[in-house]
Length: 224
Ligand code: CA
Image (tube, rainbow, N blue to C red; front, side):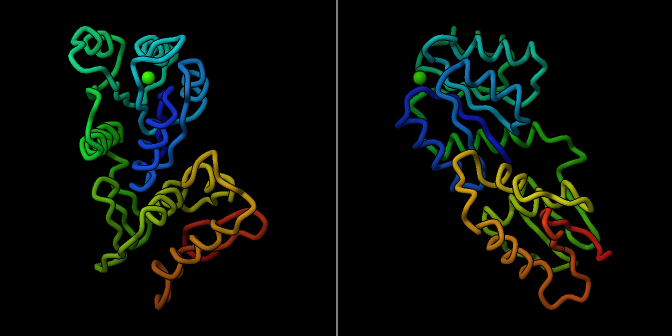
């Protein structure tokens, strides 16, 4: 799951982003409405968190413009307390929900979960390949009848593999979807995480599902 957070106050943005990342989301931050339009129309986000009060283009204007450009990602507006007209304006501009500042993180996370859930096409809620299944809402993976406990990063990685299966996923796609723009691509974290996931999914099983595609990346599927 990849989110766009639009917030001009750096401290607030990094605080929210950290909480979201701890909950398995990859997060890009836009510090202005202009940047939000650029990223929002370029990247297929699973949800957009949009602060109303921005320098330059306001959050409401950004929301309206994203919708006019055909962006369908669910949008959560972050509004100031007591400003009812802001909420109405935001919803009129095409936002799906709003949250009043200041908010507690648990509430933000609950709203994001609900938003992402609504944004998922119902056919996408469960991803399946062979006897491997991932329930995206519940963040639960099973192989056969066995539940496979996954960390947040492993979940995001498996989700990407299943979305593409049986085609391959490149290393840079993994970096982009599972981590975010600030990832140091020189590290071998991708390999480390894929190997951990592989142990959980394939160890002690005759039918291996995760395969290395030399020089390209990885694929989830039956052996060739
Ligand atoms: Ca702001």
